[in-house]
Image (cartoon, rainbow, N blue to C red; front, side, top):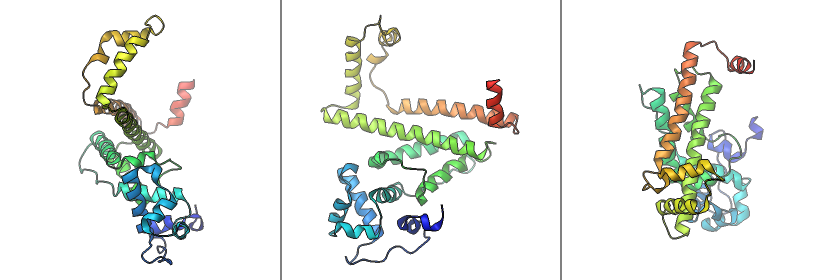
Length: 262
């Protein structure tokens, strides 16, 4: 990407060029537009965000916003960057596994504090300053593991994907339960009773064994236990890779793949 292909608002976010000056509407600025978008998303949800709605919040004409952002997606990207804020600093002396666990938990807390963020479509890799700050957080944690750089990147992408999926799934389940006038815990218990009535163990024997075990009848516990379970399994796999790299630092993934095929 060359400088002349960088959207003006993104370049401004990075300090690569001056932010667009004030337009005909007194007080209209890029920061103000982004803040208005965040306010709409926080108050009424992401679906309520449009160039027209944001302009209305600012008492400006819709077309005047295009002097600062060229498209709605560009505005959404800047809104996400503003909402997530700077990444926490890694803890000095913390091992990579504890550090990556902290990275995942910090990320989950963040996404739950601004739930509309997970509903913004992913259109590409992170490019805004705060997003890169979170990337740097994860990569810093993996220093000293012996992993190759692309493996570090794949590792934080995998962990971040787990976090994002869990945040989105639990947000959807909560919204669905609230719409039905119930709670997520009650919805899960209802699910267990429905499954018992619907499933023929002869047709679905593995599910039948699950029902028979009584696990679906247990009182709901901490929903994040399943998040932690999944995170631990990911970390177990990453730990196995770290150990392989420590045993043979010269081993390249391509060579490993070739040996598996052979």
